[in-house]
Length: 206
Image (cartoon, rainbow, N blue to C red; front, side, top):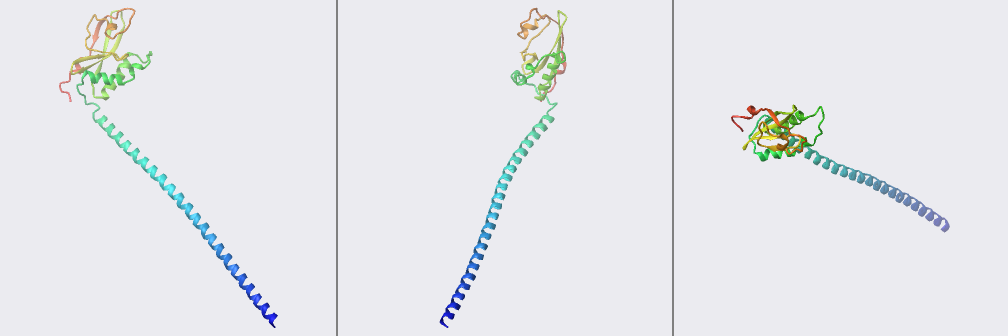
């Protein structure tokens, strides 16, 4: 009878151990699942955090681009409003504008000669509110040339579009090569000046 009691107690203890192990194992499994879920959520949060930082950087870049576009729009509006508003420049201002262009560095061709050089430089000056016009010269040997004239606070200034040389006096009989510091094999004596001085005599400058 005592042995039977021992067996029953042993069986009960075994059942308790088995059930306890089951619940402990189940609990551990549940905790592992919860930990895995927390890891997944944590990774998702990290992903959203990185995404948020990327979006912030992109937003900042977009704001900067918007500001640049606004500045560009304002610049273009001012340029459009002032497109045909001219002022009487100083000789120094004319020289500065001319030296900032790259027209004198362009290559001469039969399709892009002194006329095109001059017209392009006239446009550059016009964009800066400086009125200028082309002057055609005829030389004694039968050739011709086109340069630019503009009015300044110190009087008329001539601009040689090939070399950006600026000078203030020119008359019939002058050797043009000397006026613009060119080394010519023969003198280029000026025989005729077809001027545009009339359009430079603006009665009221802004």
